[in-house]
Length: 315
Ligand SMILES: Nc1ncnc2c1ncn2[C@@H]1O[C@H](COP(=O)(O)OP(=O)(O)O)[C@@H](O)[C@H]1O
Ligand SMILES: [Mg+2]
Ligand SMILES: [Zn+2]
Image (cartoon, rainbow, N blue to C red; front, side, top):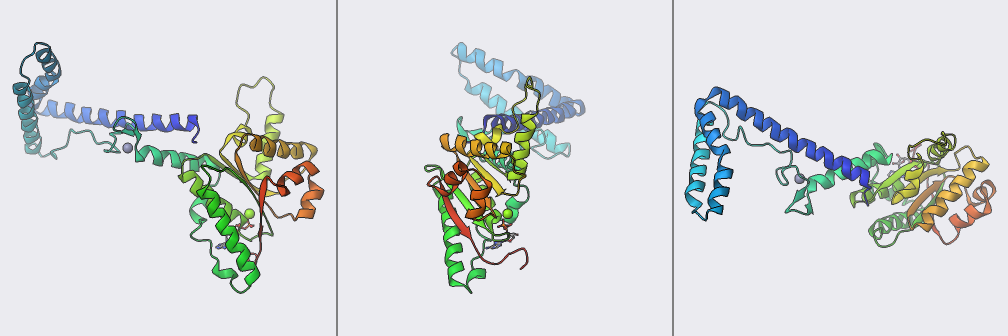
């Protein structure tokens, strides 16, 4: 699920909106009181009604006359506002989200759609997918382009179906995918399409190239041992779904190979899903990485999908 820091940041932003909206309404009221003695008088009386109601309730008195007086004052106040040439709701609080009055919750505990939307936006922003998220989806992953070749068509149709099922079952059945195929065959497209759907259903997703991920591990490695900051690579070990793109294009050293193994292994042990894509074929994977990485990827932990067809970058 969305991580806690993101949730607190988004909640604080919504809270900030609410306070700003209330402060603006207050300042519009103050403005009107300066312009109209009548409004100043009404506001003075209205500001005491809470206390009056409270006292009357304690004393067991009838509250209806007080409430009626309150309504009458509010009505009069609106009339004056209009007569001064302002819109009737001029001093109302203009919330960004009237549904939850910028609290993030409706009816006490139900998460408002605005809070959900902001969480999705924040997760997209931190996912590393950037503008690919708008460009690449299941909807614009075309199969028609493969129809000339029955074998290619069947494979790519199957890949799309597996990807969609991966999304549908994500909540209950974490799983891992290995996308294998030459450049331009749609591996990044399909993996970011998956990311987009998984983020929308409320999970924390990170997408990046293997090279960039490894560079964060390198940075952590050479950081001051006394540094208080959370390691950069921590997020790759924690997110609900990690998409590690272009395995095999990173500069391979014994250090990166052991990082990749640790990453795959830790995520597997934690029951977190991973999608890895690579231009390398099985033989190249085996010769580049240790047997223990190869056997994880090609063994039973990962479902291997082969991407075939023309290089779409050249189409
Ligand atoms: N089946 C497809 N339908 C629509 N666009 C596709 C398809 N396959 C690939 N593309 C597009 O072709 C380009 C290259 O695909 P990409 O996913 O980057 O390939 P890969 O990651 O395998 O190298 C991208 O712009 C992608 O959106
Ligand atoms: Mg790619
Ligand atoms: Zn709301």
